[in-house]
Amino acid sequence: PFDVLVIGGGPAGATAAIYAARKGIRTGIVAERFGGQILDTLGIENFISVKYTEGPKLAASLEEHVKHYNVDIMNLQRAKRLEKKDLIEVELENGAILKSKAVIIATGARWRNLGVPGEAEFKNKGVAYCPHCDGPLFEGKHVAVIGGGNSGVEAAIDLAGIAKHVTVLEFAPELKADAVLQDRLYSLPNVTVIKNAQTKEITGTDKVNGITYIDRATGEEHHIELQGVFVQIGLVPNTEWLEGTVERNRFGEIIVDKRGATNVPGVFAAGDCTDSAYKQIIISMGSGATASLGAFDYLIRN
Ligand code: FAD
Image (spheres, rainbow, N blue to C red):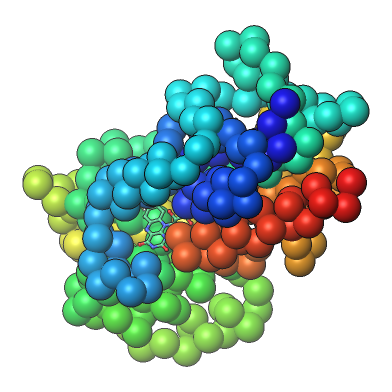
């Protein structure tokens, strides 16, 4: 059996695996897609000490760093079930059952997509999901934020300080964000809020040049010319496979303590799949290190 088995090969999982391997214990890592979300990221400017890098490049160096250690890498494998017996068992979609004394779950998250024409086509060409990451690319431009919940309104407030103009499109008749956020949003001179707006299409040529929406009250179609669209309709943790085993909050995020421990003894979690307040590369790496040290601590006590 493994001493530490990491599920997930993004920044959190890679870090957890390296920290475990450096303790000289038997370490494995299972990843559906080694690299995780950063594979879909173009420019990265907030990975501190590296002024600029690109997602696929960072993913390749993550993998190279993991490979430098004695880690059993099982790429292109998906975990589908976890069970605590004497050891912790993880069943893969291919039927294999892996056993380990401790498990670190780092299966990350995915942004909920709008699913309209243009969204996939213009991803990283004007369609963005992370205002902390990509906001500065839209300095002085006109952008839209889709979604009027807390994350959408926070994104709009954030972007209003950078962009020339921000248009918030909310599907429902009212914004769902907290009142304090709405007050702040409405106090900004360069923000327009459109409610009852159903996004129909993101338009562009080589990059985004506009958005088309339907006013759900009148049925009329409108088009706005702009350069960027931030989709803020939810971040979904990849934790469905843990249903009934590991405790999660109402968003599906795994609940962890200061050491990254879950409610199941020997099972730890890190990164975007947890209830961490913010989801970023550097934060995922920090929590991967924390969970790995937590797991090591658990092993020497049991
Ligand atoms: P992930 O990166 O999501 O990795 C999860 C891993 O688990 C993957 O290997 C996945 O294949 C695997 N996995 C999932 N389910 C299973 C399963 N059942 N079995 C086995 N493996 C599984 N952050 C920044 O700090 N700066 C940025 O500039 C930035 N830009 C971004 C741009 C985009 C377009 C996106 C989508 C995100 C961006 N982020 C950025 C956020 C950042 O990518 C994430 O916070 C970070 O990748 C989270 O790392 P993670 O390891 O927790 O999860």
